Amino acid sequence: MKSARGEGFAMSRPEFDLSVYLVTDTAQCGGPDGVVETVRRAIVGGVTLVQFRDHDLSDDEFVTLGRRVRDACISGGVPLIIDDRVHLVAEIGADGAHVGQSDMPVDQARAVLGDDLLIGLSAQAPVHVKAALSHGRDVIDYLGVGALHGTGTKPEAEELGLAGICDVVNASPWPVCVIGGVSASDAPYVSRMGCDGLSVVSAICGSTDPESSARELAEAWRRAKE
Image: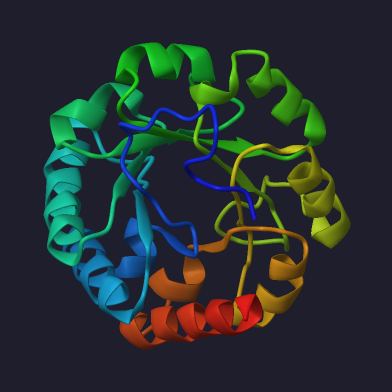
């Protein structure tokens, strides 16, 4: 396992744990109030990191809901990451941002956020790792790699499978979480590849009991790491 605070990482950034990483989906949660409640209950169940994602809200609406999610995360003692909208991280009071390959380049995101906040990067191939490394190891803090399985949440994401995920993990000096149709049953295989956690959307946001679903994922990951 790669340390989230290994040599070369800025020590002033928030501590984080990728074990069970929830990415929100407003529609699956049943609307804005559902997002907040899902996050709150999922943290009780064992979620260790939350990413607030919504591509449909205006910036003002995004900030309003993002602050509510932030409050739920603070109450639960879990860091909050903002998807894509790097320019709104400070306004929301979040702990960092997550960017994809077609979003703001990581060096620009780091320039906006400064040295004290987290940045995660989506990666689908070793070449993406190499490109990020060209800016130095401190530019990002973790990778989100996928899709492990095909998923309706992000149908455009290529299904990498275990072999493709393994290629990226082996190339990465950063901690890695796996996303894309991930379920508790994937934990043993993902763990054996050297990954640092499971990142999920539907497994929790689409659940009628987010707390129990989060607990199942957390327990599966704990067992896989034993």
